[in-house]
Length: 184
Image (cartoon, rainbow, N blue to C red; front, side, top):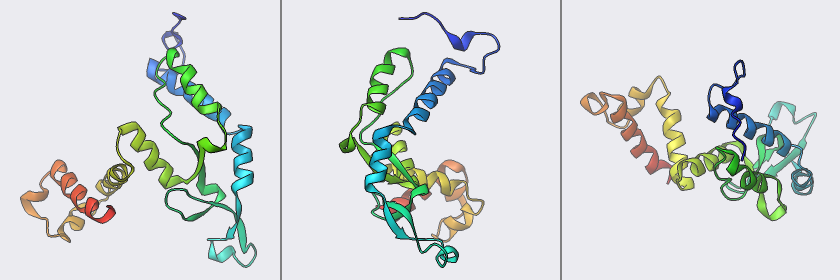
């Protein structure tokens, strides 16, 4: 294959090879946004749903939406993403490009599904980390909870104080235990 390394050219925006391949993936994903099969899938699967924005219901009682195939909740079209079923694999070098593009562009309706943005984020995280959907949902919830400024008060409400919450590692383990019980 090619021995060219565009990420090494002086003055280019990529600081590393990884950044270059991330850019290439982004360019390909932009093409996916206009894929005719994806657009037809949306057209055939969307339907009118009750407008979830109460203050706008008088003027727009219904809006276009779809049902998420994971949580089975109706969402407005802007909160739905069309996902490729199955893992898209790695794309970290030129040799990966053929498989990645085949997965991205050689699709039919049976290889697509409508997911709400939160579920799609969990699916993507589960694929990247090699976790089940439930474990990925817990991990994402733990990440969000750990950003909370009131994490100590949250843990105290479950009876965890003092040395049990003395560092971030201990707090993360406790939050994981709590959320595993609530999510699963």
